[in-house]
Length: 315
Image (cartoon, rainbow, N blue to C red; front, side):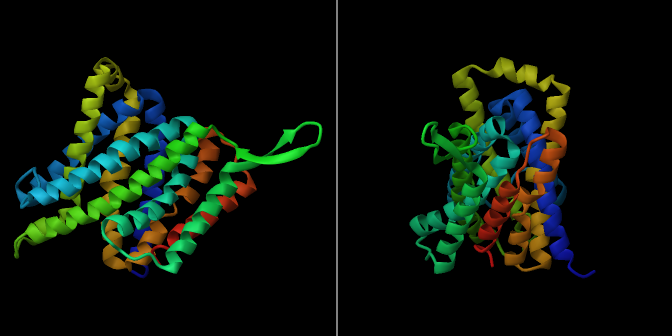
């Protein structure tokens, strides 16, 4: 079959689009902390069953203290900080704009790689950053009257500033978490002995499990400090909320991750990452159809420009 890798990569974008839509529904019914606790626990359960089936152990094998440190730190940055910001942005500005700000993740990853790992930043990366920021600005900024008498115009956000800040935080958390995760998987790969091919093949899933341990643990700690466990019980009994959460978990961290790994096996990483970054474009139509959100031509153009900028990091 021709273009199988490209087809899978497009399916990943579609899967992550569904995850964003289901997460918006679940967040508005359950709240950010409740959703993330349930989502982390479900994700760990699914991955444990997968590891048990293929390796005989429900827990990651051949891990080292360095592996747990870097992946745990990645979980705290990517899941705890990043996902709290992402899901709060869903409540305030919706999943469509929340996903648009996720195109900032490659920028954050590039800067974090430069600061933490000593990686170089190319001229192409800097150009890509400017394109991404320009596309986002086209989508979220508008010109308003600054002076009713003189009809002066000034730029302002067409949405609450808090939603914009949460969106930016989500992109930063995703990007920095990705760099830390890469460092953790590098340490994990070094600790897996020769011949343990199945463990090596499932390494990304085991790494996701370790990230979820720290992310889920931090969410539970936050709930304990804020005494929110009563609301968690009510949320679990909400059938619609749990259905949306289950769907978001399956289409996001479980199916989305597995299909993204398959895409990388059948096509180049640059093409796969570019096609998998199309979620902000894919989410436009369902946001209009299901959430009745008004979408302007300028927002569509800005979204496409932002995705093009993000794709330049991988080409």
